[in-house]
Amino acid sequence: MATNGAKPVVMHLAGSAVSDYYEGVSIVYATQCMELALAQGTYTNFVCRVHTNGKWSFPTDLSKEGLAAAEQVSMDQAVLKIKEMNPVAVVPHMFCLPGMTSYRALCDVMQIPLVGNASDVMALSTNKWNSKAVVKSFGVNVPDAEFLCKGEVPKMQPPFLVKPCNEDNSLGISLVKEGEDVQKALDHAFQFDHQVLVERYIPLGRELRVAVLEQEDGSLEMLPCLEYFLSEVDPIRTSAHKLVTDKDGVPTAQAVGGRKCPADVDDVLAAKLKDMAVRSHKALGCRDYSLYDVRVDPQGEPYFIEACLYCSFSPKSVIVAMAEQKGQAQRTIYEMLVNRAIGRKAAPSGAKLGMKA
Image (tube, rainbow, N blue to C red):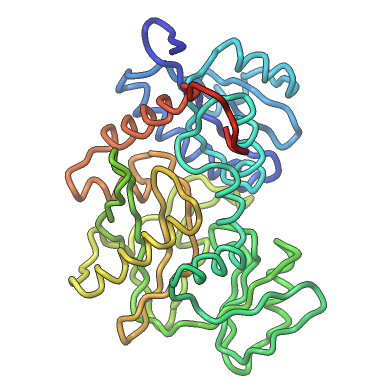
C-alpha cells in the first residue's frame, strides 16, 4: 500500500471540465468533505482540481485564496503529479457529465480505485431514458415516457414533465399542465441536452429519496428515507430547492429546509421501496451505494424517477444524513468505503482470461 507517513494517500478529485455551475457544486461538497477528512487524520488527503480551460491544479486548501493561488498545469503534468503522489484511492467530487464519466474512467486507467460507482455505471444512470429502460426491465415501476430529439413533439397529452436526458440538479426541467406552452418547455430543455425526456406527471403524494448501502458481505441495507415536502402550488423539485447560487448562477451552498429524515414510512411502503432500490442497484450495476428519487402517488404506489449515484461524504450529503439516523457517523461510512476501495487495489492472482480486469 502506498503511504505517506504510514497513512494511505487519498486523492479528492474536484472541479469541472465544462461548467462554472458544476464547478461550484463540486467545490461546495468537496470543501465540506475535506474539512472532516483532514480533522479525522486517518489518511493523507490531497485535492486534484480540474478546470474548465483544460488545466489542472493541486490546491493546498479549497478556500478562495487557496484555489486562486494554485498553479495550473497541463493534463500530462497533472498525471505525472498524481503518479508522484501515488494515491491508493480516489474520492470523486465532480458532478458534470465528463467528471462523472471520463475522469472516473481516467482513474481506472491509472489503476487508482474509485470510491463509489464506476464510470460506465455513471454514464448509464445519468441518461434518464436509458436508466429507466434498464430498471424497468428488472421489474421496477417507472412513469410512462417519450424520448424526443430536436424537431420532434410529444404524442403524450399534459400534464407531463419535460427534462433533458443528461442533466442533474433539475436544470432544464419544466412541468407542463393542460393548456400550457409545450414548445417553451421543449426549448428550455433542449438548451441543456440534444435529447429530451417527456415523462408522465405522477400526482403529488410524496417525494422521497431512497438509498441502499452495500455491506461487507455484499448484502444491501436500505437506509432511513428522506422526504421532501412539496405542495400542489409547488409540486416538483427545481434547482432552487437544491442549491443556493450567487448572482452569476454559480452554486455557493446547499439549500436547506422543506425535508425530513427519517421520513415516516410504514412497513408496507418500506418493503416496496427496498424492493425498488435493490432491483435498481442490481440493474444498473452499482457498487458501494446507490440513491434514488422516488415519487409516491396518492394511492401509495412508488415510481422510480431517477438514479443519483454519487456521494461526496460531506455532513449534508444525503447518504451521510440517512446513515446518521441509524447511528452510523460520517466517519464510519466514509472510512468503510475508502478502505473498501483501497482493498480493490490488489490485482487478483493467476491467469487473466476475461474481458474485465
